Amino acid sequence: MSKGEGRRNNKKCLVYFAAFVVFQTAIILVFALTVMKVKSPKVRFNAMAVESFSSNNNNNNSTSINMRLLAQVTIKNTNFGHFKYQNSTLSVLYNGVQVGEVVVPGDVPALEKRRSSIYRWM
Image 1 (cartoon, helix red, strand yellow):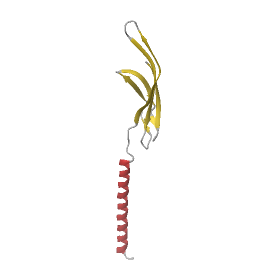
Image 2 (tube, rainbow, N blue to C red; image 1 turned 135 degrees about the horizontal axis):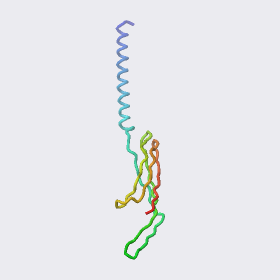
Image 3 (spheres, rainbow, N blue to C red; image 1 turned 90 degrees about the vertical axis):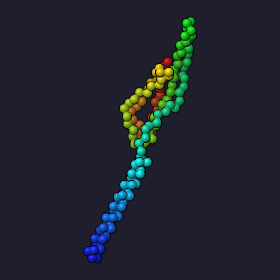
Image 4 (cartoon, one colour; image 1 turned 45 degrees about the vertical axis):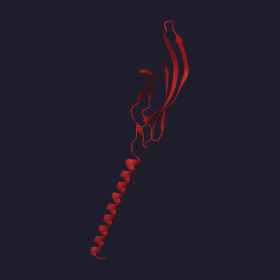
């Protein structure tokens, strides 16, 4: 083997290595931009039920309503990684008046759901 062939083989190896690095970088970039894209968690009301209900009619044509509501809220993390945030408070409003409130825990593991229940007397 002469010196010219050895240099040619080294250059050929270097070209193959550079092509491999470019190919791997492209694969990682496509994977990161499509599959591993960070998404916001999904917050949903699953069910709401009225546990108790009563109403009173006063003499001056005003009515008071007293009820106990039960609602379940689900936070779904669709990411492949742990999703952390500060503890939050979720308020339920009806005509601008707060009728329910629950503390939402500050983390959801990867690809999991967290459920919280809201109880409120009105």
